[in-house]
Length: 222
Image 1 (cartoon, rainbow, N blue to C red):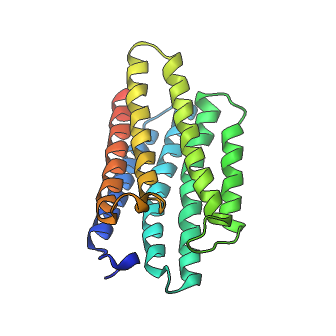
Image 2: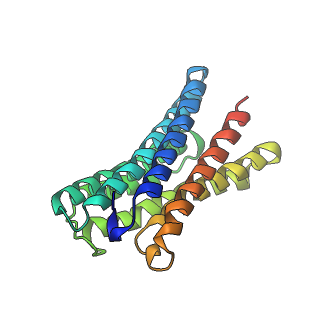
C-alpha cells in the first residue's frame, strides 16, 4: 500500500496501530482505577483521562487514513482530516475540563478556548496544502490546548512540594512527550525531517509519554 508522497505505509501503519493499542491500554488502566475510586472528583478525573487516551489514539488513525486520500479524493480526504482534527481537540478538552473542574480553578478559560477551536475545525473550509481555514484553526488550537495542559501541570508542579511535586514533574514530562510527538508529525516539520524518520519518531515519543504518564499516575494513586 502506498501513502502520501509515494512512501510505503507499512511502517507508518504498524506504528500507528501500535500507538492506538498502547493508548487504549492506558485508557483501560484508568478505567480500572476509576472503578475502584470512591471519590467523585477522582473518578471524574480518571474518566477525563480515559477520554483523552481513547480519542488521541483514534486521531492518529484518522489522520493516517486521510493521508491516503490526499490528492486522490478531496471529499474523503477532507472528511477524515476533519474527523481526526476534531477528535484530537476533543481529546485535549477531556483533560482540560476535568483539570479546570477539580485541580485548578481557572473558570474554564482554557476549555472554552479549546471548544472554540473544535467548532472552527469542524465548520471552517479546508483547502489541501494551504494553511488556512480549518487547517489553520487546528494548527493553532491543538498546540494551544496542549500548551494549556502543560501550563496547568507546571502550575501544579510549582505549588506542590515533596513526593507530589516529584510525581507531577514526571507526569508533565509524559504529557510533553505526547504533544512533542504530535508536533513532529505535522506537515510543516516534514520539510525539515525525512518522513521515514517522522513515521518512527512521532509514535515513539507519544508511546513513551503515554506510558510514563500512566505508570506515574498508577503508582501515584496506590
